[in-house]
Image (cartoon, rainbow, N blue to C red; front, side, top):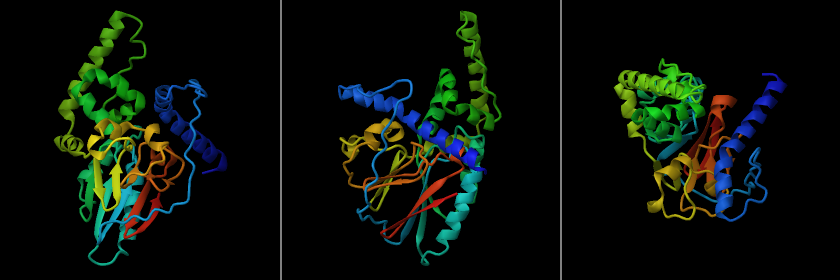
Amino acid sequence: MSRLPQLLQRSFLEQFGRLTRSATSLRARIRAGSTRGVHLESPAVAQPARSAVTRVTSAPDGECLYAIGDIHGRRDLLERLVEEIEADSANLPEGTTVTLVFLGDYIDRGLQSRDVIEFFLGDRLDKFNTVFLMGNHEEAFLKFLEDASFGSQWVRFGGGETLYSYGFQPPNTRGSLGSHEAMAAARDAWATLWTAFRERLPEAHLDFYRSLKPYYTAGDYLFVHAGLRPEKAMQDQTIRDMLWIRDEFLDDTKQFSHLIVHGHTPAEGIFRDNRRIGLDTGAFLSGKLSAARFFGKDISFLTT
C-alpha cells in the first residue's frame, strides 16, 4: 500500500475512534456539571496518557490465553490471525491448555459477517478451548430479530453489511419522512425483510448469537467487550455497560481487581497500561486484527 492511502486510512480511523466516543464524553461532562470545551460539531476527546506498565498479572497455571479483538465481518483477517495463533501455540510446553477468548463484534461493517459465524461453527477451532463474548453489535442483531422497526437504526452502524452477507438488501428508506404514505411503505418494507430474514437465518447461527457471554474471567484477567463502570462492584455491573461503555471506563484511572481486556473502541494500535488492554484496532477498515497472549506472567501481542 502506498504512503498516501496509509495516511488517509490512519486519519479516518483516528477520527472514527473519536466520533465513537463523542456521545458518552458529552454525557459524562454534563453529569459533571461542565460543558466547557465541548464542541458538538467535532468533539476532541483526550486520549489517556500511557504510563509505564508495572502491574504483574498471571494467567492460570498450565493455560495460555489468547484474546482476539473486534473482527467486524473480516473472516479473511480472522483466518490469518488464527494461523498465527496456531504457529505461536505450537511452541508452548506440552500439555498446555490453549483458550481463545473472542471479545465480541464479530459482525457488521464488514461484508464477511455471515462467513465469520460460519468459521466459528466449523471445525477449525476444535483444537482450542473457545470463549465467545457478546458485543454491542451482536446485541443489536438480536434486537432486530425481536423488533423489525429497529432495522432502520441498525443499518446506520453497520447492520446493512450483515444483511448483505446473509443475502438481503436493506430497504431504501431515505425518503420515508416525505409523507405518511412513504413512512408506511418503509415500515412495510422492513417488516417484509424481517419476516424473510427470520425464516432463513440458520438455526445454528441463532443458537450461537444467543449463547454469547457478557464477560469471562481467568487468572488475573477479566475479558469483556466494552469495559466496566469504575464506581461499581462486579455484582452491580450491567450488561449494557459491559457492551456499550466508553469514556467513563476509558478515562478513569483506578485499577480494578483484574486487568481488563476489552475491545469496542477502535484505535490505531493496541493500548496497554496498568488497568486495561484495548484490542480493537479497527480491523474492518485498517486490515489490522489484533490479539493478546497471556501465559504465566508474560503478555505479548499478535497482529495481522
